[in-house]
Image (cartoon, rainbow, N blue to C red; front, side):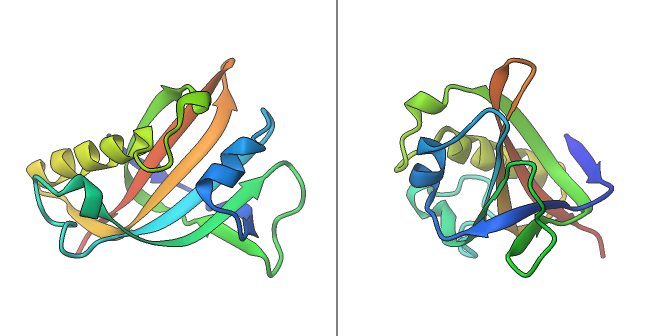
Length: 143
């Protein structure tokens, strides 16, 4: 689905990898991961799963404390392809996290609908409505 994020979401930058962030995840936390999508796979309807992700750009945590400082990173305001799923964080496999398949399906749907997609992928973990949730955001570009 298309989602217009009207204001950026801010997070405190961490130097941690996803596995370490999830190990310490608390119900009042929100976690953001930002990856580049491999340019060779970013425009394919059938990308190669093992080659889909590029480099990790940043990770961040928002636990209700002040995040508007030099260590802040954000999910910028704008229009995104968006998908979310209830998540069982205990079953996360860092080599093949559940959101990776979601991101690939999101790309397939977005390209099928003739959207031009940005090369950055955002993954957000949070706890809402008594369940863990993983959300995937991919920028839609309008020219």
